[in-house]
Length: 324
Image (cartoon, rainbow, N blue to C red; front, side):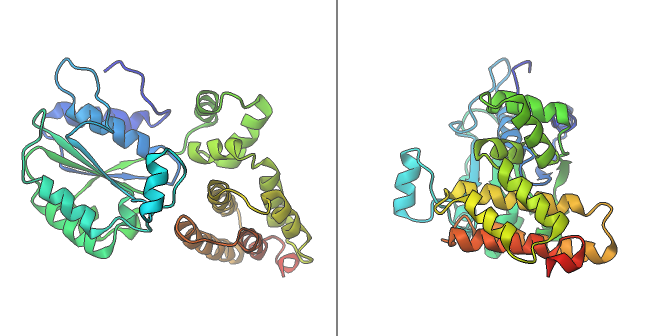
């Protein structure tokens, strides 16, 4: 177990996972809970590989091992499936479907292929269709011997209580500044020290957001976001600047990264805000969360989307009168 791990931080969660494997009393359902961008995806895959590895063998590749099954968003259509096969960016369906879950359950009728354990990863579980959740619940109630579920959840409260009650929760914490800098040095080696410092400050513990900050050059956009949150934007001037920084035809990944950055900025404003402003921040954050779930599959007009983001930030600005 001395191989280098493909994630930084989350050592407490990893030690808890290893202890459970070694205990001989491994719980069959696990809920990997924490904000988006904290590394749950990478953790789940290496955790599943550790679970199914054979004694004395190296940790296997989770994407090709026959006893690791990953349920995630499928391509939106045949054209998007071709893009995926070619290694290009592609659009996905909004939800993990009941058909995907039923297909997984059918596989559970057979024994694991290489050993006596198999892992089912659902990424993310809070994006399952309602009927898919109900189908999964039956499998969680009576899991086949040697089958273990890893459910990733950005918002565990969206899952049914009956799902949560059948899982052991593994919580993911925000990374500290040193860990975030380590992530950036590893995954964005072209970034300079000043860019890394700005990314660390803007991400508030999320490695996913920090990497997106660097990859999509979001420094200027973040500065404008924070200016709107501090001053408001009564004359729409800052929103216009925000649209210019975003560009006329930004890539979808850049739009998604900007949405996540705005959500993080709003969440970080909650501490120390007055009760009245907290309500505005929560309302704006909720709207951005809804947009974030729709953006991967809807063709939003980029200009309108960034103006909407700016408007939501302005609605939560301080002082209030400057946001009107």
